[in-house]
Length: 428
Image (cartoon, rainbow, N blue to C red; front, side, top):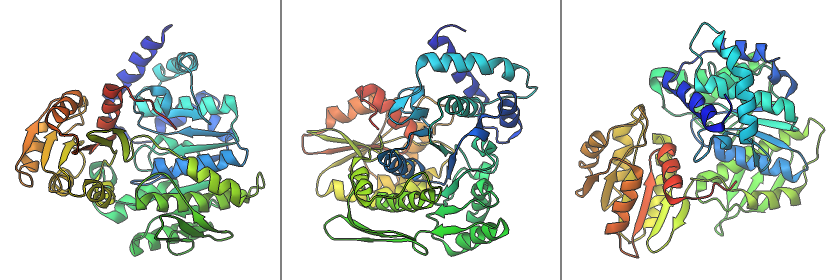
């Protein structure tokens, strides 16, 4: 394997094996590679929504305090290297080729199917062990207990942003069942910071932390934020209070994500490697960007992309979409994965639209446009089908007037397709 394209072909070929939860493969991979995870200071982040944004806030604040920060996240929008980043620098093509060459012989000796996520998780851990960033932010792919990132056994901190019904065939059909899977990342003696708000789920996680002799801090119970009419907010933490904070990422839910990151920052300061500086915090929050989240990418007509990919995300998006629409015509472009709550997501989104164009990402997991169209027609009179995101965007632009709003959502994979079609830079 000599070229980057050959390497990508091999890596993406592993995606055909689909999702296979379990730790056998990642344990064997990491063991054979020297257990790179054991040399890293890790913050392990799980949750149904908000992981990426919370991670982005925390990353920027840690960097502002002089730390180098490795980030492992998924999915990528345009390029594989977006998944593995240190500070503002993604892993290089040369390093992807070299690490794949190193890990592939190990994979070929494992008598089980090794998935794309198993492989890339080990690759990321090995890369970070070689580069030695001060802290690594490790985002789960699916669930927690059996997620490949759970190979780490002694993180500095665990975070669970929230719990919602998702991936029920893998994680369970109730919030408590899904919470049990997410809580699989909890470790003895390791503190938890969480945005979970439902009482039964909070009680469940609190009990788990008690069993592990570890602390847990919940947004709204142990630390809080207060929103102001001018769009700023104040943070009331366990040890710090900050007034007049501002973020540029739109959406009230992003202030919640910023508060989670602030509590995580407080917790990490106990490690003695930095002291929280209020001025650095305020400046860092203003810098945070997370691509594909309520992102404006065009004008006349306005074009927005948002990666709301499950019912919980759609509920958070609704007030922002209503605000953006105002009194103008909304052309909604929508593609959803078939393992999501398609009916409920479509109901909430299509009922806001004047016209719906349903589409799909080029994945086996994608819900068929025909099924989406059938659901959308229950809530909107004008529904059409497009078999690719590129065609959907062309169709929307052809029918839109300068004052209209074109809004694409339902899947990060569709957002990624739009980034490619529109040739947009992925700016962190």
